[in-house]
Amino acid sequence: MHGALTSNPLNFTFTADAVVSSVTPVSGPMSAPTRLTIRGANFNLGLAVACHLEQGSTLALVPATLVTNVSDAQINCTLGDGAATWQLGSIGVFVALGPQATYGPGTSFLRYPTPTLHALTPVLGVGNSRRL
Image 1: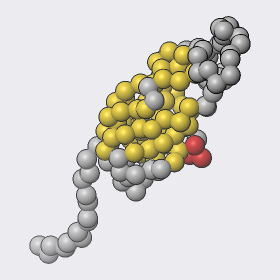
Image 2: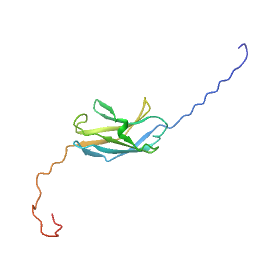
Image 3: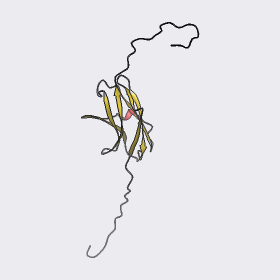
Image 4: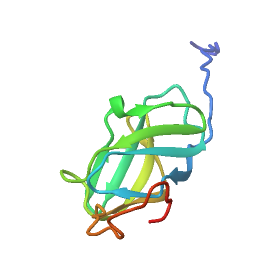
């Protein structure tokens, strides 16, 4: 030790932050699961990837079984029906990489009331008519 130098090199790599640039579709009904396609950059860094959703004070990670097609620029995740967790309105969409790093919101997803068909006219059509 006295005047001797030792070396113990460590490799360390800096990577760019993940970026969420778009979510499609931008909206979906409360009653049905919706598959979200999240596009951006730097998603595939060798870390566990998850969709992180936020609405008001509700935070949730979409279960890994519902996250698919993980690539550097795209993640697909399925947002379950809204009855249990999500209310009507805007839901912030984030990408979680590993246990601590969360990136976004690049955009949000809008949950709307399930459409209901009350009437259809005319109720009768003729032959090969393509009229509604």
